[in-house]
Length: 113
Image (cartoon, rainbow, N blue to C red):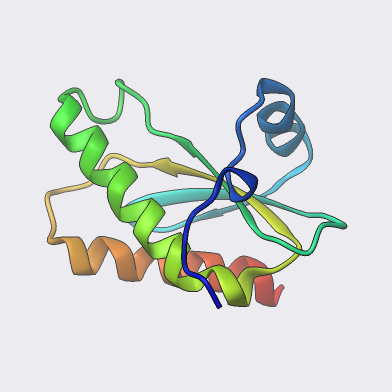
């Protein structure tokens, strides 16, 4: 099993984002907001929407993107048939482990519904 995050496991087109925003189930945590849609494909896909309104500094936006990609990459095998759009929320500063754990819980919460 490869843990690479390939092009096929990313949401790239605006139409894909739009369909998830219109039809997706939303789950919120302390640091993240996740929208997800069950699909017919066998591979999980990830899209990121980290806003400047939420994290003004590019270094913070990049940190959240990096954590989201890494967490998704490790959980990818358990998340088959789902497409996720992950958004960061306003929250007080926390370490990377806490932020990653929050996202892991949200991803599994969506899948287990």
